[in-house]
Image (cartoon, rainbow, N blue to C red; front, side, top):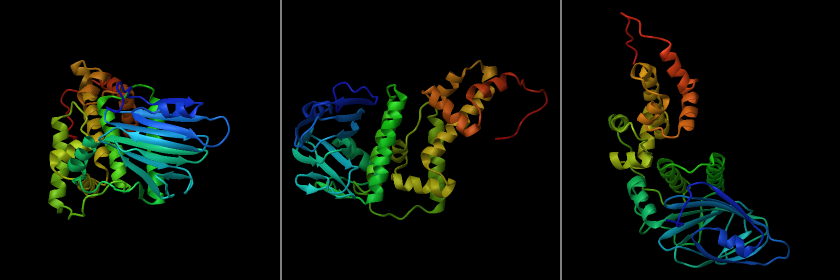
Length: 334
């Protein structure tokens, strides 16, 4: 783990000393030297997951930072500041680029006053396994060998926006993340790193013919229904169906016009709705039905349910209780 006792929730702290700022970041060996005059203020918003650390750091004054991430880990640093206001090992981090360093290797950062940088640290074995099983690419010979990786300004802005949203959502939640939520977050961050070009994508491959695309979507649905009591992630589907994430996305977009995760959540919500409609006869509660379909966070379940169906789960259950079956009538709707 990146920290001995991760809280699995977003934590924010403010420092009024550069050394204090350096110590606040979990799992790093680093030293900050303040190079410009004035009272220092630094901010850190951090989420430590099982195998990943995501954070955003702000510093008020020019700093020279000597940094090192733990061994067998990789750090991606994405500044939001103007081009040229930061350097890594004397190399300018351009406006369209991010910084990259493997663990166990000391490096130097020079950051200007009013600096903001997002960081992602991921354990090496997790990154390699994800690359092989989900992206279908080997990292051994493809991990960046330079400190600065150009990804394009628009992609960089998109990556920063997604990381900011992740931290904002986590801070608003205020409660520890469930194991499934943590795995999903880690997978989504890794997918973003591949999507923006921070990590190598797989070589272009011919997409499956239409019958195979339909078969992949059907197999995904069947697998979900067999395992309905737990949420199925996109990485798990990729491993199960032996396809890359890009192939899976292409198949779902072509056959259904939507992303795999969106469709899988809709199938689970529809299953829950049907069960709620029959729950009165089986003396089942909203919580019972939600758990049966792998929804363990009740407030999120209620939010997603209402967004899809325009009513709360409890309203579906109440309507079912107040509408007994009529003898001689049967619905053939599916």
